[in-house]
Length: 65
Image 1: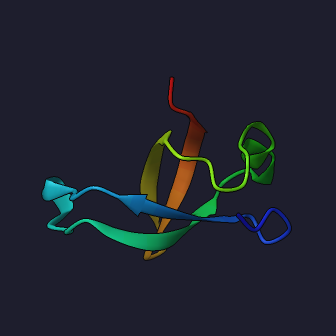
Image 2 (image 1 turned 180 degrees about the vertical axis):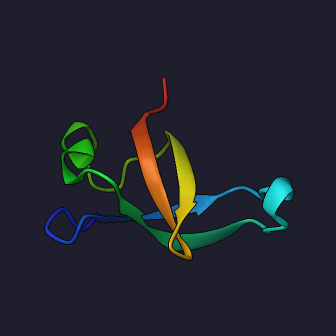
Image 3 (image 1 turned 90 degrees about the horizontal axis):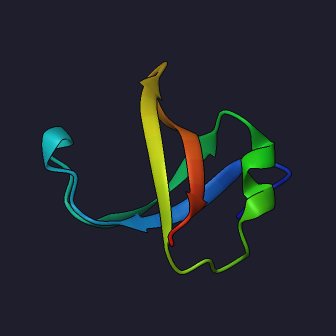
């Protein structure tokens, strides 16, 4: 997590609709305060993202469970 920069690194499963294999990548957040509910090294999260200006940006993220 990079709270100051508003970014999070996520290892995700394959996303078939985008043709993406499982991978680890950095995502920007639409709102940095979304990270307040997460812990560093959070094991599982649920998130949604959109494509904006050629980047993929998380619009919501929360701990799994």
